Structure formats: structure tokens, C-alpha cells
Amino acid sequence: MYELTKEGAQAARKADAGGGAIKEMGKYVGAFTQAKNVTTKKGGRGIEFVFKADNGQTAKFAIYTQSATGEQYQGYEALMAIMACMGLRCIKPVDGVALKYDFDQRKDVEEEASIFPQLCKSIGVLLETEDYEKQNGNIATRMVLKNVFRAADELTASEILDRKTEPLQLARMIEGLRHRPVKNAPAQLYQEQPTRTAPQPAGDGFDEWAEAPF
Image (cartoon, rainbow, N blue to C red; front, side, top):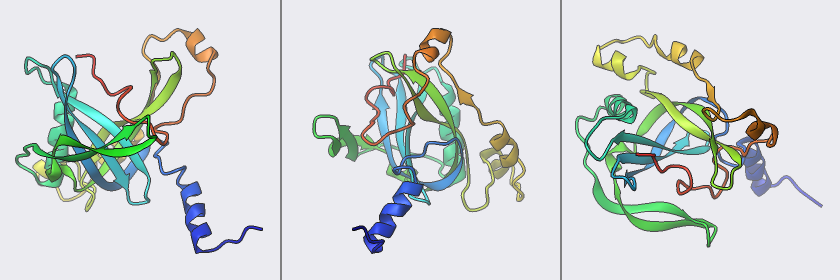
């Protein structure tokens, strides 16, 4: 026998949330719960984010800001937009603790890390979906940060900097959201795998896909 108790009601809400992971592109309001400073194998710099929406769903994504030689990437623009929307003039990493998924234990574990606690604030994000080829050759899908906006009034970074009071750009940005297939992927790769892995399944950390090619 099954009974819709208080505990059962919580389970029902989790079902609506798709297992707690954001799987659809779109507009979300919530907060970054983790912002970890990272360095790629080739010396590039970036930040790994964990975002939790107000509805309880979460997404993990990374932005890369510069190469080992200091060349700025598009992720730098995204970071500046985040700071503008949060009213931050300067951020500096500090030693702290971050969660990392342990594939052997099949759960998140704490690790010492360089983190940006200043970025763990309320924010609005626009997320796109992107296909990528996993190490085993399968195609999976991940969430990608496209734009950000101030959660309180939906103003974008440029509108905040220009001291605008009415949000006009967000609707256009939402219309521009797109799904990104694997670049230059042969059609056979998709034909052999008609069903892609859902974005950010439980237990999927940054380890396999977040490493930048620079």
C-alpha cells in the first residue's frame, strides 16, 4: 500500500523537478551555491559554478576567463556581467571548501579548494543546452550559461551600467536561446545514438567535460 503522506508529497515535488537537475534551456532565478576557482591542465583559468534555482533544481557549468598567457576568453565577459548584476567591483579567491562528486563513493564529498564566496548570491541566469562527446564516444547534453540578469528587477548588466530602470533586453535574450549540437560531428554519430544523456544527471560532476582545451 502507498499513501500520499507529507514525505510522499515531497517525493512528488521532486518528480516534477526532474530529479533536481535543470534539463531545459530557459530563464531561471536563484543563486550560485558554489563558485570554485579552477586552472586547466594547460594553464587557463576559469570558475566552476553550481546554480540552485528557486524551485530547487540545480545546474553545474563552467566559464573560462583567460588563457595561461592572459588572453581573455568570452567567459571573462560573462564574469564581468555576473559581477555587474551582483553589484561587485572586485572579487578575490580565498581558501575554503567545495563539494566534488566522488565517482567511487557515488556522492558529493568535501575538498579543499580556492573559492569565490562573494559570487554566492542571488542571480538570474539564461541557460542553453549543448551536446558534447563523452570519453566513451557517447553523446550527452550539458547546460551552458548564456546570459545573466539581476534577479530583483530583471535588468541586464549593460542596463545596470547604463542606469536603466526598465528591463528591455531580457525578452530578446530569451528568444535567442538555442540548443548547440556537437560541432562538425558526423551524422552517423547522432544516428547511432538517437537518445542523448539528460543534462547534469545525478552524480555527474565537472571531471569529464569541464576541462577546457586551452
